[in-house]
Image (cartoon, rainbow, N blue to C red; front, side, top):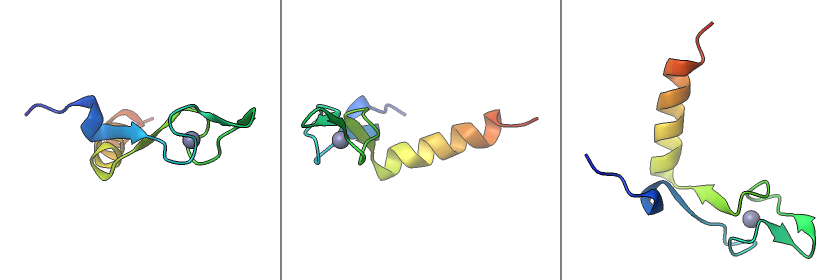
Length: 54
Ligand SMILES: [Zn+2]
């Protein structure tokens, strides 16, 4: 299965990928400039499920 980065995250529509809005950290993406797509969230959830074991 091939997953492109664009399938996992997209530019944040609130700050248009800048990560900041008027010098303030964008709250929609926490300053990352990208937000996870549903596929990205699924993958992240899957990874965390298998990594976050103590
Ligand atoms: Zn943003």
